[in-house]
Image (tube, rainbow, N blue to C red):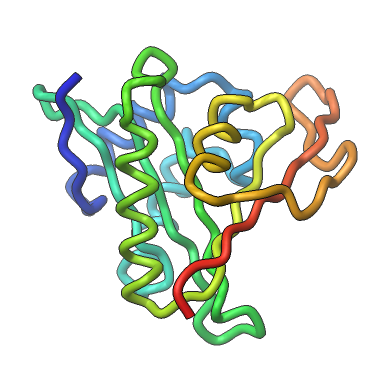
Length: 167
């Protein structure tokens, strides 16, 4: 399946909302914010402009967003050497290398920023994401029991994975 990886831009706002609307709710649990809300996308774009998020999109041959990855940093915090990876891929596009391509873009950005470590959070049942991240060097560092709740109130355990990189 052909796709192109590029930076997320303000002109992509509506396409990102459409992408998020097509994701299963469970995929959005570990993000902490509901990407289906326009104000969340607006805040995301502001964070990109401010320079503390590097965000990448995967688009198909028709320009439709089919995946997204972000590297979130806090350059002024105690963990300025650590970046958080956020990865989302449409369910029908998984297993074809799209997630790996997005993760490679995040690794390149992390290296350019001189980061020493990456983390990623996900519910423990997100086996595909976990397998992908473990294949590129991530390992589980923590498990937070019943840490996130879905819209029905069901609690889920949250796994925190980490990967040392660069310096």
